[in-house]
Picture 1 (cartoon, rainbow, N blue to C red):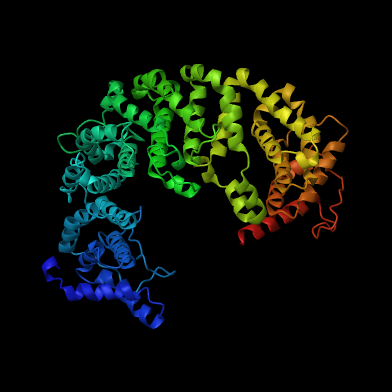
Picture 2: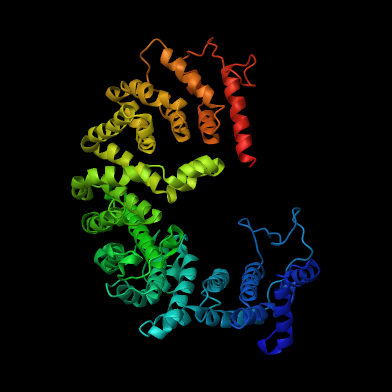
Length: 627
């Protein structure tokens, strides 16, 4: 159906249906929802939805609903949906059996053409974040199938809008064009080198525009939020274009991707302007709102700070340079074709970022704010730098600062953690055991950095670190109960446990572990502080292979203490106690023929301790995952 054939009455009827879908009256809402569900079968529906979405006079919720329906229909009906094996997928609204009332048809070519022609125009003019994000996602859904072959004018249209960046009145259009361009680049982000031909062409055509724009936006005179939003999108485009392969040259004459190594590998200096942009983004001061300095009006709540565009810019800058460091910065691990670039990066690029990275990590010790994500990424960068000789030489004088002023506080439990432990234990357990924490939690990256420092630079770091931790434990034991720093002790034990592999591997350290367990871990099994009881159970897991020199009394006491914690009032403690495996409970065959009463346990009655453990472990996990 052409745009001329769509009447305003049809658009108005759809507008009413979308409006009525929000009605509290079920008799009004149900017919409206049925109409919306049937839109995919109506020719011209996508054009009507786009018309409603772009109309600024329409109620916001209705515009948003129209944008959602447009995205869903384009995703489901642009081409036939198939699985990786090539088999047709069931409709999105299929029931549990895979059946749906009708198979959705593919969109008519005239509808596709009309949507592609108008969608980008609407997106470029859209000021609302939610609606423009939905439109950009619709661009992505279509570009997956049509770009570049069936949508050749998409890239020229976006580049034309970006080229107007010198005009302040065009800031919105420039930002939205960058947003759409990033969505197109993301299409090829994880593709093999042979499939990246369109992305290489995008880089060739767009980077000459993006580089001077990013240089201006990262300059010391740029403080606007609009500038930060645009710079963030440029960095995201750079990320999508470079995180797996540096862009190759122009495509071959037959249109296939050029799989030759990137020109940047042979001439690393060509990347320096981008490195300068990343460095400028990292060193840019972000003062508190109360200071009255540019950029002004930094939010005060943690959630709003995390979403503030200038912190997002720092996050992407740190993420890009850390990714480049991990992929190209250590020559010993680099592939043959990138050896030369890796050598240049390790000797010339990585060292120039140590200053900005360490200055960023110094924000929190100096009493200033820094987002968790930025701290996490900067610690990852330092972790790589510790292993590399040229960068470690520069880091060495600052290792005490990094280990004791940055890493140790980052590993400590926060007030939010403790509140969650006490009031929402299920969420606490979930976060502590989430495999995703490696990708965002500064606590995990701090642990990794400490272990790397001991592993690669143990001669410089091991003894001072152990002395620092031992002093904390001795101070805790010597302090009256009311004045003890429980959080500091928990963190010291966390570091000891994280170094378990190294400590157990060396006899001189392994021989001291029994004393550590008896003096600093055993008492915590009965501590009034829940998270210390939890840490004590965790320490048993970490040092299950530690040697015991006495007559077995210590080990029997340890087993008794662990079994008692299975009925601890705090769920996280129960979970950690239940993780202690059969071998860890049985120890050095002391459990053979040994009977240790587990008083009051409904699992005791004549059962072996292994069966007690397994039954209780099963019970605890069932209890946890049933919530």
